[in-house]
Length: 343
Image (cartoon, rainbow, N blue to C red; front, side):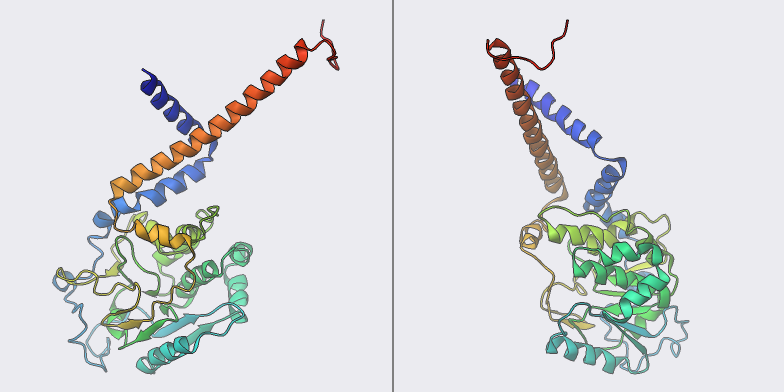
């Protein structure tokens, strides 16, 4: 009987906490936590394959001088290459070497280097309604992530992390409207993205920034991932009503992680230096959960919220109990004189 009352109390307390949250907060939490459960189904038709797209995922059949136009395909994505570096410190020498490799493999493309000088001007001019939010992001990487989407939406092309050293040209991918590599275990990486100008999905990524702009106390990694990072972008992808033009670069069935950009890896396109320069201490805890089953993660989240709700309820109950006890004690004290006397 006691256990039954405890369960009912926990459920009621959890419901009270959810009711206390704003409707937008509940909706945001729902969208973010549903990603592991819906990703496989929602991305099934978006994954590039040999069968569906007649595309060699290993890139071995594409010559070094391959041209989308010469192959008789109309290039949807313009030949523009974006790199972003914000902050007072100069990029490490190995990053500059990696970028030089990418410029070498794309010598006919137009190059963009976004920095502290031109980036604020670009955002203020083209996205004035988001400028204050962009300027006040607590973490620099959030500004970088948001700028990726803005630069792609305005100019199109490819945006690359500084720690990606190109091994060949991205030219074969210009036939698609939007491309990003698959991540593990769910979602896609924003370390490499290619898109056409004024892309509807990229525009949706920009328009959704305000809704997901939320600080998770003591969890900087979660704050970044859920507000501007890969988890955010993948969540917005699952909310699209039309995903037919969005493509995910994965791998063949025997090697689905072929293009995953995680750690020090070599893919057909890149040598990834695996910097992860923005990762903080809480990232280690989150990354430990990446291979956990979604159901277990969901149960853990529910338990965590339940415990927090119970602690909050206990704290309020204890405070109220002691406050009531103090009043009763004062009333029994002959020397106590109330300020007001009701008749």
